[in-house]
Length: 343
Ligand SMILES: Nc1nc2c(ncn2[C@@H]2O[C@H](COP(=O)(O)OP(=O)(O)OP(=O)(O)O)[C@@H](O)[C@H]2O)c(=O)[nH]1
Ligand SMILES: [Mg+2]
Ligand SMILES: [Zn+2]
Image 1 (tube, rainbow, N blue to C red):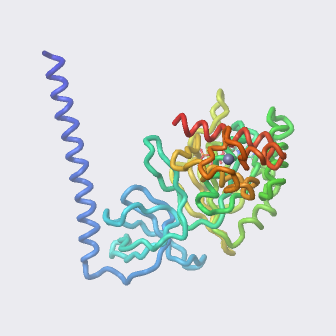
Image 2 (image 1 turned 135 degrees about the vertical axis):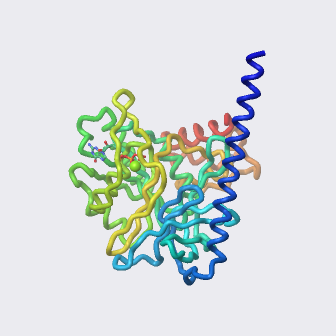
Image 3 (image 1 turned 90 degrees about the vertical axis):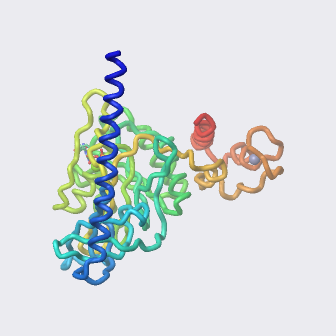
């Protein structure tokens, strides 16, 4: 009896919390709509989304200029759909130094990935290149790099591999692995940079690669994405976090993507670490596309519906037999395809 009563009470409380939540959301929408109809709203301006927090979004004037730079907290109408860091928007200023976003411009591209429940989550938009950061710690994995490169191919964005924390290399159990990864991806034709935000190693090359472009830093938590941006842009003062003592993994210090600027041109987007990059939104063809060295062979299998496992005349298996794709990458390809079939 007592148990049932408690349950009813709990249900009532949950409903109350939910009602309050939806009332608050409605009020926020009303507030944004009200602000929209106010006659003292400023003119429509172009802006870029610096960072977003649910219904509130930080916007800066676009295009960026160091002299006139400022960040304005804006409301967003719920009918505008998802807004993400890097979006360009039309906004109007309010008298209380807040703003209202009235439209989102079409994106050149968008970085997205499946979340825990398979729903697509936006990472950033309007990106020129992605910098995939790995380090001696947390432990680097080729499979994870391959996943990022597959995603980058799918997003239509060129990836660069950044091996960070090279000051730790000589004492690292993964020194050899990192050296192998460096030569593997260099041979495939990708740009591979080495860096250390601790000792400033590689910063000139990194800066040159970032100049004049919008680059998103991606990778596991703790590889030093925020530290790299702090070193490249002194004064950005981004919070960084130590690895956990036991597991030597990152603690997810950065929680939302945010844009930073080189005064001389070039935007950097810091993003939260991603534990494992799910590719469940992609089919086998998209996975194959992510393997650059297979491009000459894709579409050349004898059978149109070849699944590249045991069919005669398979061009993908043929490429492997002829050494056009190395064992490490071929095995990684199948591990990824198998993992998709499991999921
Ligand atoms: N030795 C060494 N440590 C570094 C270097 N760069 C970053 N670190 C350390 O690595 C830890 C993680 O750095 P962050 O910059 O917070 O890593 P992150 O990739 O931004 O992590 P998330 O925000 O959690 O995704 C911090 O303790 C940094 O001091 C480096 O070049 N060398
Ligand atoms: Mg960070
Ligand atoms: Zn085949």
